[in-house]
Length: 338
Image (cartoon, rainbow, N blue to C red):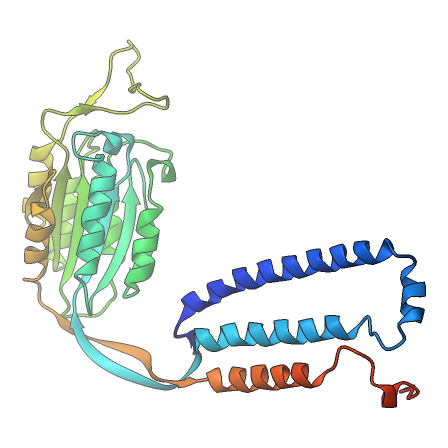
């Protein structure tokens, strides 16, 4: 397996790009200045010892050596040893409501962004666990299959928005059904389904789905986001809100009763997300109670540094550049290679 120990050093290539641009500009200005004195061919004949190619060759040798120096600073490495380690963890599938009502701002900055923030902090607390992401509205689909790659999980989380699903609604049943099919077949590991929703426009069947998941040994937790008093849904234009057919502003309210019924049926707990950080702490406490089973993970435990190869190439190129003279060698003037 190949990787860079210091990948941020690769941004230095941007600086090399500017150096290249300055070089081409300087060459253009130099030729323009020489043309003021006459034909370039005539000037070359008047200065037989001046080489038109060697300065350019010296620059390109230096430039290539700088490219290798940047690679040197980035510290390329090859993995040489794989180890399988058994760790203890749980499996969690998070189903996030992305219906339009999740854009309401009764929770700052809005319901969806607050929910994403809660998920991000939850993922930060995972160590040897696995996590999967499902998004749902009127339909449900897998955003990220269950994985132990938490960096990818947070990247996929950032891209979630209401535009992912065209069909509106809050089909919690579809989300739970899909979550139950998303876990690995491993037995003895704690499996949690976390539903984050405002419960608006609930389509039914969610309580039965939660019961079925509980019978399979999965815990269903429900996090209700929003306020019972409700808030208007921002419209497509600034300072406007979504309206019904009669032109009245639509107010979306948190359906706490529905959320509580689903959590009770799934042997889990209901937690309300508000403008504090209590929800994330309460959820982490509940998830930590789940039984953890050994999960076997394969990874590269040793990496061989490859920067020495880059260092030698850069050194040889710089040495060659120092030995190469800009003027033509008198002894080699009459030597013809071909």
